[in-house]
Image (cartoon, rainbow, N blue to C red):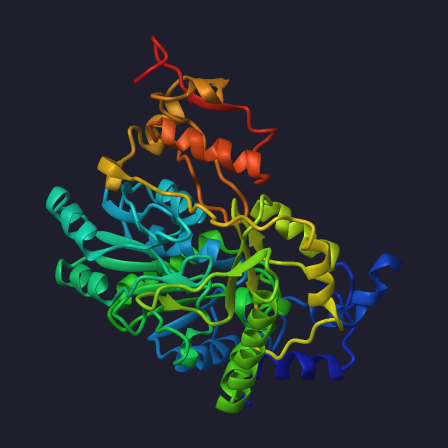
Length: 478
């Protein structure tokens, strides 16, 4: 398997080099003793030396590694990211839109998408997704929502989608992407959890196959790559000036000292995916199914069976509590058995499997069942209902530029109904804002925040979430 970047790093180390350059650990010769377990990788943590190319102007091994990834994903160009999908989201929006452009954004997008809209100076129009009736989770946009948005904002320049959701679930997107392209919208996709979709069935298709212009994927989420390593894919539908504009944006947002460890892990992750044979994929998925069967034996847990109308990632397993336990409390019980799950919400816990066969401690499922056995099973679990009503298509009340100059004050969260938020309120994970800066706060948003707080959610805020910054007007309301 061709791994040009890794081979070049190995060749460099075989020369027994003397470091007269950064970084300061000097090929792993200088470090605190506590790092001794990490020392084998330090010699490969180098900088732009002779023969090792430059991520910001690649002409050698990095270019070869990126081209190999582009061939796998069947793109015009694939770029390596060392700042996660976040930096790719920033670059694609800043590179493709101008200040003031109207851009449709799926409301349940990651915070980095909204940060990108703020930095690019675009006018975001928020499109509410559809919600699964069983779990209350957002599962993607409907074409009808985009059609109505186009009638209201015919001047729009782009559409930003999130695919799939964090739980690996999505509505089919081909109709909405086709409609967007018919209306000359640029289609950008935060595809953070879909780097493995290039494998084909039984995995869903990537939006790149469906006509998207740009997709950013977190290789580190579902591929065997190091944290913060991602891909930015550009389709042949983007002309060269547009691609160049994205590259210029990346030059601003990415570190000027990119990690060779992260880039090498991208080279290796791509090669690993290429090496997977159908028989191994079947064994991996059979292992996931076996875990689902073991979990289904536990009365206090229900494995969510999603609708056949959705696109589903078979490496994601969502379970829900059938007791008085919240999802966060159920997750804590998993922790007691050293089973570290991806995330929890009010009612659910998400298990994420990788592209390898996984083993579990002997009797772990029986022990988990024993710990959960004292909790009484409820006859029916009520799913959260979501009513978006007239808020299906919504503009922010104030732009990011306006917010910078407006007076602000901090008030009790319960008193913020009807006021304009001056900060984001974000549960993490998954990092999807409940409240956006510039958005008018309504009672439904406050209720959602309080429900998550009571269930045990963690928010990205300076302190315990009891107050919120709002726009300070003369009467307190806008």
